[in-house]
Image 1 (cartoon, rainbow, N blue to C red):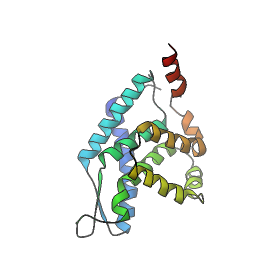
Image 2: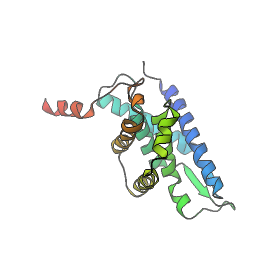
Image 3: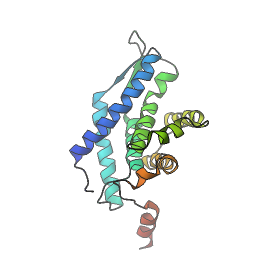
Image 4: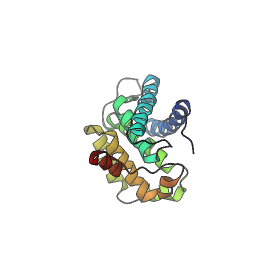
Length: 190
């Protein structure tokens, strides 16, 4: 399948980001917070993603589409870098507490999960989020996202691991499999 144009990529990433945003927004509204999404930051996120994707594709000589976990990791890195979500209390003053500090981290995770799970059977998604260890693992991931500078390749590995365990068919669908390790070692053997 041919690569998408930058405009198609911008649109696709914006649609998925909006869907994840709706989930986060509703969760925070239920807690009594007023979340807002900065549209300028969203544009920066999509442009940063496109630049990262292009650099990655050039570095590893990818001429086809990239895998979903790579999209998820690159977008998560951009979301964490630009932090597009602001949380306010009902009176529109800045909120304090758990919800206010992890909204962007939640958006990065749920957006990445949506990309990895796109088109997967509902039971695969349910199997992941109903796992007895999911909540602890999820809170640990949010903590990692919030308290550490995580490079995009590390985020790719997190989403690739999720895909290997829960969305295996999506790794094969409409993507080119690139073995980064062997591509990297070949470069250094010359």
